[in-house]
Length: 100
Length: 100
Length: 100
Length: 100
Image 1 (spheres, each protein chain N blue to C red):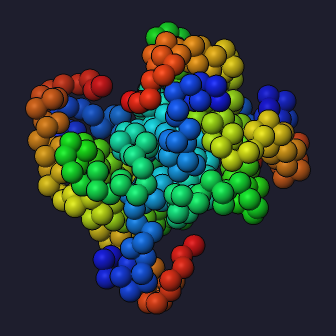
Image 2 (cartoon, rainbow over the protein chains, first blue to last red):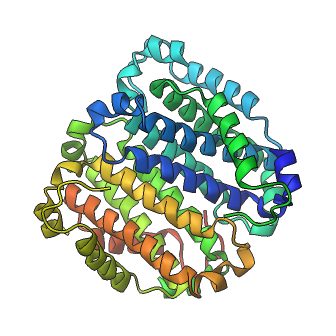
């Protein structure tokens, strides 16, 4: 992604607020795929084509902007996610059936 | 994450629309960290503490819900992201200075 | 709202991208209220206290930032909404049971 | 809007989580209009055509889904917004230059 941006001189667009708005745009596209699906059949419908391929694409876009934002901020996303998982394990002991 | 959910019987919460709304909630928390930062100093401020640690946490939450949604839908997020990168390289040839 | 902002010298914060991120933050808070509610009981639960009061507050926040953004851009939101309703009536003739 | 929905039998789509995802979709479209605008010229660019008309449309969509959600939940949005303004006036006395 760094190379891709450098070859197009796109770094100048990548301040955090802009990248964050781009992420919001992709989350919005993902939401549009699901909005009118009945809740009880959404998983089944979205796991089948053509929805699955479209959801894949939008989720990839969300991930790529998240990684770009992490790169701009110097954040290691994998380390951050592992720390969060450990933190969640402490906050919600195994057997907690309810969540907040 | 699968084990974590199973131990808490949280799978029943994880229909796609619910997980997507949870993702939206985390994107909102991330946006709140950046909203009033001046655009020109946002990157510098967000790369320093205390903002960096808070942004790390919210970005981890976004990533974890994105992975959970991918798991619910049976989507391989890494493959999807690579396909998107390849697609972007075709859509925007090296040297394209403008983006849509 | 204009007077409120002027008395606090908050106009300097109100560039469109910042206000938009603030709106995203409030939409995120609204999403958090609904995310784990079962789809079939969400309307009933959200129409009763304590959820109704909390949803009211978050929806007010979304509306206020939307109005602020309209003011910053010189957009008359009521006229825009009426135009959109007229446009929707043309796009989806009465009797259309499906929507896109 | 009630009449419009009734004539199309769209009420069956309008559970809160679905309407909320539709709102998120429209906020995403709004974000896409602004994401790559330079912060310092965004207000000027967005107050001129063609961006102003497109922003008007997306903002109208956000407003209409917000009103629809309020209707589904039995919330009076105008009263909620006024209450929030009063609350903000108490939380941030005139002369507060900083906001949280």
